[in-house]
Length: 349
Image (cartoon, rainbow, N blue to C red; front, side, top):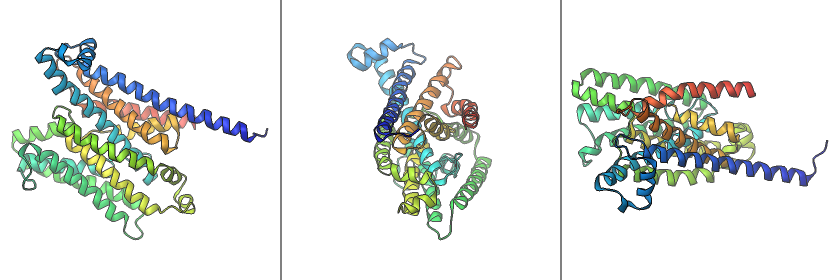
């Protein structure tokens, strides 16, 4: 049976409409999850009070206003931004490394950030001029960023392929974990407790300054990535095919790693170690939309933000009166969710 050009064009339009609808549905679900996250907490402010307060803050008492605008809202927005940043970084990393298990943490970014934070918490060492309440985030960002810059330098070496990058990233994970363990060994009991809590991944340290910085990073990086979406889609067809299209694959990979370093380092620096979001978000988006990066990248950001918002919500509901660090929740729900995605993908293939 032969397909006419008009039928092919109509099929293409239907496919585009379905993809736009899917991305919009993810955005709608994210809005519902954020409202539920903001409306949940120990103070008893329900969804009606929260929505009324967001529309007209004058209807809230002073205590309710502080709870909503200084605690719940920045934490909910930080969950969205961290999820979007990590999932977007994971999607790009899986593409440029042609590895479905790649994520910002596969190549040692999280381990490097934890080591930087441990130096600040235990030894109090940081760059001069940084305020005391920012040295943990600053150290985590510096070491995470340096780890990716090291990978980028390796990527530019002659003959260094994808396998070399992945193996070097794994080596960084073990090296930074060993260094962090050494810092923990000499830490005082109080410093060790603080370091362990940081490494669990928590939204409790969020403030509007951190939300603004991460929002700026995501707002810059996402459009930047979308500009290169056609080239990234071509790279998914294989490096040889991408080269045949005239793409500079080495430069494309270098620029993508730069974007990954900005997203992952900033997110980890502010909230600590958050696992599996960088893996689950892109895989969920890929299952829904395929490999077209014009849709895969924004869908990955929405999916990662949705997973983080639901994890933040679950962290408040699992144990009444206690907020479980969101990093623990993502690890608990991330493992079965990721296994379900992998098994479902194999069955469909």
